[in-house]
Length: 425
Image 1 (tube, rainbow, N blue to C red):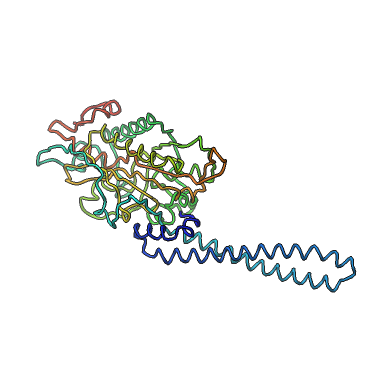
Image 2: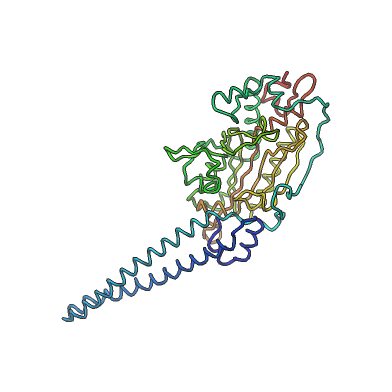
């Protein structure tokens, strides 16, 4: 979340950023926070003065009693009692102001970097790069949901029987392909210096608030109400929360972690080809890369993460493009974000497979994730970054559709050692 210092000392800059993010009632919320912060500061100052005055008065009571001035001593006791009651009111005012500020801060999105494109919807995103290696396929090519049925790779109906729509069952070579991709992505991340983590796939409320999924996406997360736990929408949540309430040494940064998890999202699906098959699921597999870094190096880390994801798509021989998301289409927590999309020749459309984001200090402030600077030992908020490397469903869809041949579905060379086969027939 934004810091009080940002809001009070850089108010115009914050309002400009929130306008770019299309946060509708920015001025109202920011002004309310400033007002509450003034109440908090005024109450704190008055409380400090009262406490000093109470201490001073209390010190003289004993002397007055010794001097036989009991009546004067009682008057001072009465003054101290009044100050104590006033202090209770001031403490209540401070607590209420702090709680109200915190609640409002949770509703404010991150402000975008200056180079983030202006715009409100996905149509306003800017194509940063596009690789023109779209395959030429015959007119009778099949979409992945028909290929999966033809080659007995995925059973959609069985998933509905066991759980419901959006929970497919992978079978035979379909399951093997899933495992191959997971292992491939994890091995590539390890080669790039990421430490593999195997985190829980359920988290508590503090973890959800720490990375910004709560309260923003509360309705999109599966909630285990009896235990007040949430199924994770991404490994970003548990992995980043490792560093909640932690002070790191500067020499430890950047920290680079990766994790494979199942991911769960309640996002409502509509009907049609855009959400058919693997295009939108409630449960799916994903490998995530996460970094904790210094403010001075985080932009370089972001570039390295983008290059890593691009390298994966190149090794999978998939046509892809990179989009720089506009302010209105970015996530609630991101300061900048690039999406990777792969092209499906069978569906004639681009499929999003990764988002790589820099959150600046937004998550770190929620998490209280700081580092101690080497030169002066002062603490400062870290920067956090994360990206999908990669999410499996649409990768699988594109692999099946773009690599179909009369003999079967060709497996990219990089995956053959992981699959144990070079064609699905």
